[in-house]
Image (tube, rainbow, N blue to C red):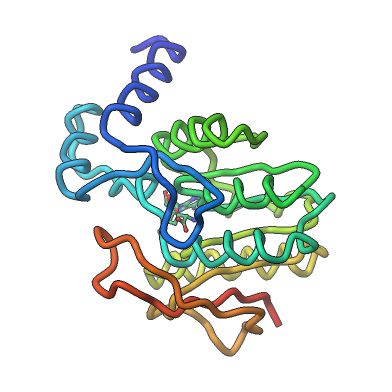
Length: 221
Ligand SMILES: C[S@@+](CC[C@H](N)C(=O)[O-])C[C@H]1O[C@@H](n2cnc3c(N)ncnc32)[C@H](O)[C@@H]1O
């Protein structure tokens, strides 16, 4: 088995090699390592891991829901300023980075994809921001004691949306403010949400068909 430090360095080299540093659409304040076409990058990930059936490289793209949460935090810093923030399903880390840029006291970003964790670390360094990162699935546990939970674009599959919503509701019941970003994906439970903001944002063409999408930022009822 590869040495963990060596493995982490290989992943960093992989992310640097197959991405380009650029501002995500609609977020000129941030810079991210972003990918080109999805399929070749996905194939390269499978080759790197010597495994088939790995998750798509979500970490290499800014998803519309995350773009909206990040935009909202950069425009409304009072939502997170001085507070403890958790970004679940962080992907590239854009929501976590926006929270840190908006003055959060602490920011933790979690994702289940080890490449995401690598990318978030690189993206935090790139933006000179402090984000704690972990490769973990928190959804079977009690939500941690934080003030704000961010979730960008987590309602794109039925089972996943149900699991996330149940956990976000527990976080909310425990006192956290939940901020969920979504462009109207099929499994968004609108009846359980209150819309805080809406943006028409330019999209990442590799992952969205329309060049612009209307994206909402919601909290739980
Ligand atoms: C569509 S991407 C959104 C990424 C980012 N929030 C954004 O808006 O750009 C969904 C992310 O959820 C992550 N994910 C899926 N299930 C998860 C779980 N149970 N816990 C944490 N992350 C999860 C995936 O690895 C992926 O990075």
